[in-house]
Image (cartoon, rainbow, N blue to C red; front, top):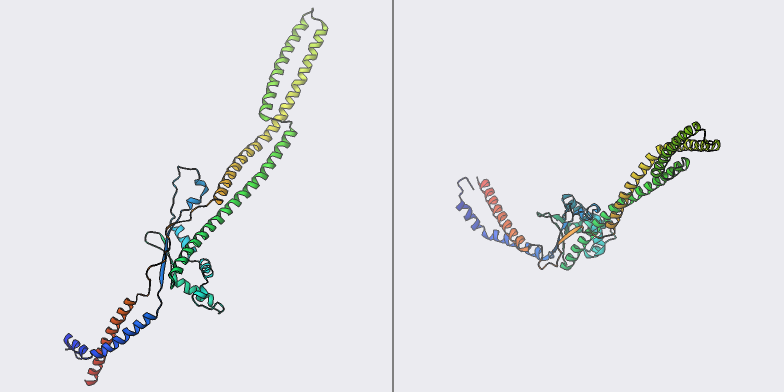
Amino acid sequence: MDQKTTLIDIIKLIYKRRKQILIATSVVTFLTIVIMLMMPDYFKSTTVFYAASPDLSKPDLLGTNDVQKRYYGDKKDIDRILTIANSNNIKDYLIDKYDLYEHYDIDSTKKYAKFKLRKKFSSLYKVMKNERDAIELSVEDKDKVIAAKIANEAREKVKSEVHRLIKSIQKSEIEKYRLKIKDKNIELKRLNDSIQNIKNKYSIFDPDIQGESLTQQLTDTKSKLSFLKSKLKVWRKDRYVKRDSISLLTANIAGNEAKLMELDSLIKLFDRGSLLLTPIVNQKNQLIKQLSLDNEKENQLSAIYNSDFKVVHLVEKAEVPLRKYRPKRSLYVIAAFLLSLFFSILVVLIMEESKAIKFD
């Protein structure tokens, strides 16, 4: 063909070679139909669910109405579920449960049997996040009932694994608080022993009452002693007062002075003990407060650990599909027909161009 070749010339050439083009196109189309008919039908079953928020398993939200609780998970929660759902742990569980070696006709004794089976199953098992942030878990299989069963079982296994993971974290938190509580109880015992030793050493039984009592006794004794001394001074000037009375009063004064010295000694001892006791008692009270908070937290964690909580919100269970998912035989046949027609015409044009070049 030369540069003056027109569309009409091309059409004439195609018409001239129509038999060859039709034969080639028919052969390719027929072979495609045969191949498509030999390919098995695959059915696809899909379950849809949302990731639940970790707030549903947090103990610090219990009984607090003023905290805004989230019911649906964020990107991290979705990614966690996608990671677990696509893990070999889930795939191997499904492989074992549904005996997929036999189902896919793979010899389990061969060297790379497990690798081949995982690869085969992975091509039929898909987990993805859709445009509405829901998770879609799909399974394809020649048996539509099996496809639905595996999809639902996979979702339940993912739920179980997420639940187990959260429970494991909660258990770790509980153990951490129990260890803290144990350490605090040991420290509390040590403080109680120290307090008791100080009380025994400094004769302290009740710091508040005892301190007030000693102060009051000291005040009363000083007042009484002052009164008795004044009285003695008056009696000594009075010649009518008997010496026995003065001696008795003097003895009384001496007794109160001895009592005053004893009280002064007790107060000094009490003050030294109180100086040591006060910081330890304050430390003990602070420790008791912390221990109470830790016990409450541990109780909340234990309550959550022993209760059930949602890790996913189910939107749609996987149902037995009514129609096959693939292969789309008509699309393949039409595509094969159009492609074979195009390439047949292209070959005819190339051959004609080659002849023209040789002739020239």
